[in-house]
Image (tube, rainbow, N blue to C red; front, side, top):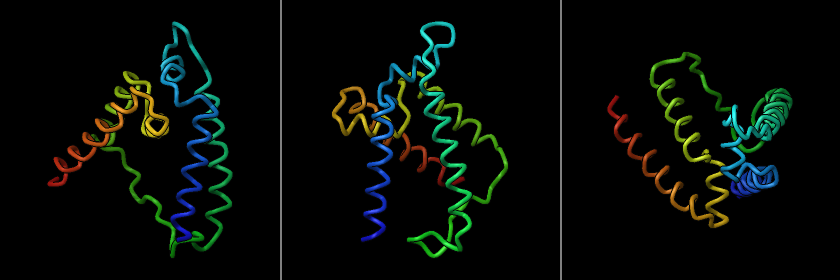
Length: 138
């Protein structure tokens, strides 16, 4: 039950942060990507705040022998950059640039019943499942 409550609290905190910062509005994200038009630097400040907070918090958390609700930390071990990572990152960026949504803000917007997010999220989920199935044999 503690893990479920921790996940709920984390999700609420994440969603509130996205909503308060305006990152659930695709126009804000697209404004950040529009370097030579109606540029909006808000995303840069939100990203800077998130990265700075995470850098400090990880230093403190990783001093512990284990997480509070798990037996051990589950940290990535791969550090190489392969074609699959580059292609996936490129496709993610193209989708983000076309729609103005990345997964977190899209889910928050769908929860708020925003019509574009209600289309985007199911398509994102289906494409993720199909891609995972197609690549499962590799």
